[in-house]
Image 1 (cartoon, rainbow, N blue to C red):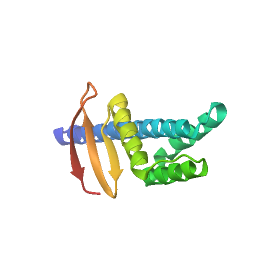
Image 2 (cartoon, rainbow, N blue to C red):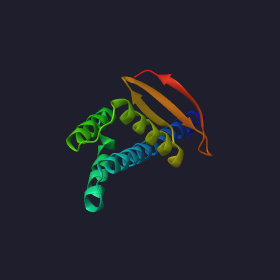
Image 3 (cartoon, one colour):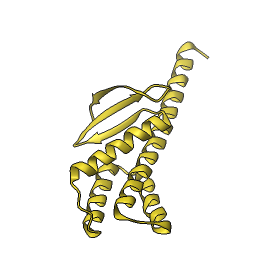
Image 4 (spheres, rainbow, N blue to C red):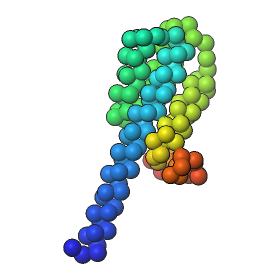
Length: 134
């Protein structure tokens, strides 16, 4: 095996690992966001679990973040929960930051059409953000 082949294999392994961590962080973010929304609505027991579980399923869908924000906005209106879209987006951002720390993974957050990469140190603290092209 050549040095080039070894390097290529290492990059492929790193990419697969990063994608797995990214998926875990997205699923965790969605679970945390769904839990927050369910608490705001006042769901309990089986309804709470079903509601939160449906958020986790969304982790594999494209444009998941906007779909969840739209869903929560609609659910809040339907259940008489008064809040702003800014507060809902802030809850999504907080859930994403917490999920990235807990999973200790690079986390891609989309916000108004742009993407931000939050890099996380092995101890879980953020050490920077930078804009990324879509």
